[in-house]
Image (cartoon, rainbow, N blue to C red):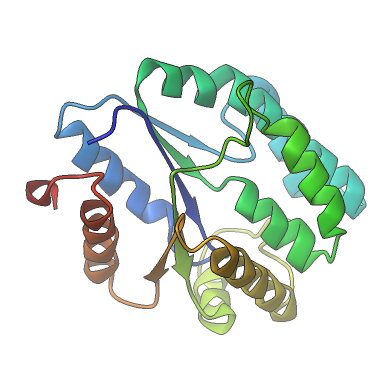
Length: 215
């Protein structure tokens, strides 16, 4: 069992990832852990303002990427790094993989520029980059996600994109997962809520992050 743990939850809009964050938080809290639940873009007062701009204001892909990484920088400095330094569990609804999926895959923005921004924003003092210890990728076919979104709330700039956009986002997530199989865990998101929850908690157990009884 580790002290501080950073877990990100990823997937296209409609995959249902957000529904399972609370179950994971409850499992860790049942073990006496302090849990910080947060999201991206967002997590701080400044980052939430930038989130609102990204989700609702028209802008070009470069401006969008810069705002997302600016929000991430403040989020890291104000929330994530202090929590990890305290030995807390950090559960984040999306992180940098989402930027490569949505801005890189969906928007078709230059991956080299995103990689450079990632290196600047997430650099650690001792070297390397701040990345989640585990990324749970809730994989769902874009056509199924579209059906779910059609029955949900009023869509934002991303949720209202055509299905072809989400296919590109899905494929970009798949590429990120294939490039870092040690960090990623694929969760089939087309199953029942109970089955998906079981798969999530089983993954945490298998990775040594939760004891078996926490399932």
